[in-house]
Length: 72
Image 1: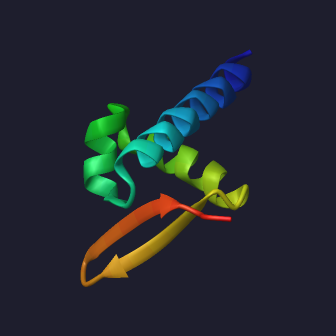
Image 2: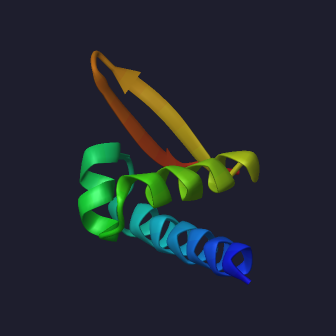
């Protein structure tokens, strides 16, 4: 039962990330963490889910990593 709750939380967070990226466009992971309002581990799991589904794109500028929705 705990695993199902965890998967649900990851899916919910992935949805929040997707909506945030639709509204804000490209954003740093630090700002995304603040916008979504979850702990970093859950954010990373949801980012992984979206990346696996080919929904997001990453870019690095120096030390900063930005994420955006994949167009197409």
